Image (cartoon, rainbow, N blue to C red; front, side, top):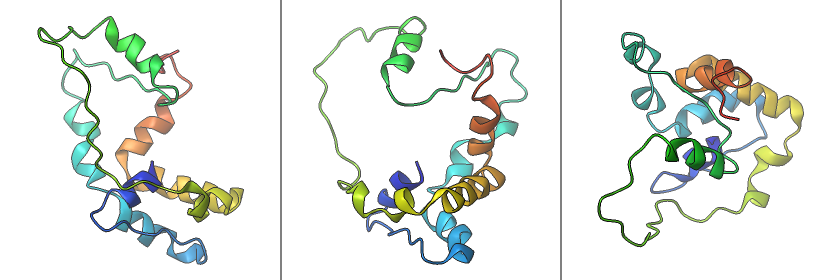
Amino acid sequence: HLQSQCNGWRRPIKFKCDDPNDIERQIDSCAIKIDYRFRNEDLKFDPNITLKCFDPMPPSRYRDYMGNILQRKRIESTYFHRPTNQNRNKSKECIWSAGEEFQSRTRQLMIQKYEYYQFCDECMGTENELP
């Protein structure tokens, strides 16, 4: 998710793994208004909302779950892909080969700083995680 955010800018940001003291600044530079898109306080006052969490891969689990809840479109059309990010080459993204300690520190910082990741961390493995 972080690497997708780094790639989401008009000019993609290259996340660098050579300075463990610079992880937080780099996370902040990539995070695309994540605090504006998800805030726990906006959801606390509505008893009719039950948040679920899921691992996005494979996407069929989410589709299967929501397929029983959402209505189908009255007029369906053929899906047309609209690319928003530039293509990524994961083999050139250092985070995947940076080692467990660096990856763990990055995850910890994201969970500490952003409510979205706090929610995911607390929800995964509970009854609210989609099967």
